[in-house]
Image (tube, rainbow, N blue to C red):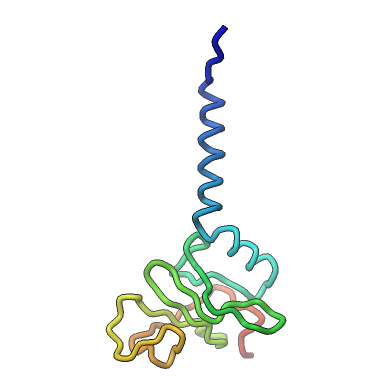
Amino acid sequence: MKHRLTIPILIKTTLGAAIILVIMFTNLLSNSWMLLTDRGNFIPAESSIFSFEPYVINPGSSNYWIYGEDGKHYYYFSYDRTTPYAFIAKSNSCPNFDRLNFKTWCSAQPGHAATVGQHSKQ
């Protein structure tokens, strides 16, 4: 008797493989952990939990991001309640642009989060 793969088994296997690939090749797991462990963290509205990647993290007891990026933008956490972050296109033409120094971001736009974390100024 030959063993045949049934459609439900094939669908479950494919779905399981897809979930594993999403976890392995996106920032979903690390961003989820960041959001769960520090309630002051957030993902910028222009980005997503799958693509946002913090590249400078606060070195203190809180693990909130200071600088981050995704495929299109760089982000800076500004600590301001009304505009909690700024963002700029990766394809910007700012002279002497430094992704680690928001003061060189000549065409940065303010970001507006729906809820601002505990790290913002009052």
